[in-house]
Amino acid sequence: MFAFLFGISALLGNVDAALAGDPIRCTVIIDEKTGETIFRQGNCDQGFYPQSTFKLPLAMMGYDAGILVDEHNPLWRYRPELQRQRKIERKDTDPAIWLRDSVVWFSQELTTKLGDRAFARYVAGFGYGNENVSGGLTQAWLMSSLKISAEEQARFLLRFRRGELPISEEARQKTEAIVPRFQAADGWTIQGKTGSGWLRSSKGETNLERPLGWFVGWAVRGDRRLVFARLSIGNHRYRGNPISFETRDALIADLPKLVEGR
Image 1 (cartoon, one colour):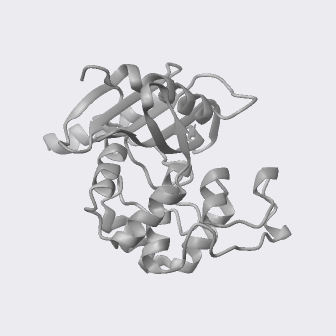
Image 2 (cartoon, helix red, strand yellow; image 1 turned 90 degrees about the vertical axis):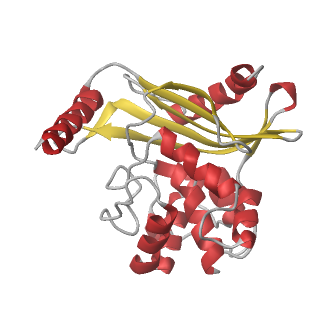
């Protein structure tokens, strides 16, 4: 009975947090070698939609299953009937372009080729977030059933970087090769993926006043290697670039200072 009441309380707490006007933020940074958390601040345990950060596990699946071949193969043709709203997506796309420009239709083509059974098997094998793919092959990670916390994002990437996920080493290396790369201060090189969306209201409606932004990945300087996840949920509309760009740029600027001396 206590467990049941605790679960209901936690659920209501999640709803309250989603509907409240206060921003939600979290940053987690973990040392890849030791697995030690060297920086953690904010609301890092509550699950949210992964959005386009899910392209990282999708790339792992695609390369492991042999659907994706290398950085530039396959090249899938854009079909006008897809009618993507973002102009940047209206083009033929290969794996490198897919991650660089965050092309949603390429993700959906990939999951369709994987099929329901393989897709669900990979998500469960990865232990990814709540593992709930009931939202379907093309939508589960897009403001739907699949949720993951910042802590889980970082721990998932730690297992990926250590070669502990149930995929081939070749798939791991090929995934790393297409992840966008950024230079930070003090000699740090960062690779990572953004993700943008919104929270939903208690009625399931998109709440444009609650934009959600992720940046997750890893950072390397010499023989030091870190994994990280940063989540930002705002309390006002973004009319220009998505909140995830701001989240990404802030993490790139902050990381060297956050890990100095740690």
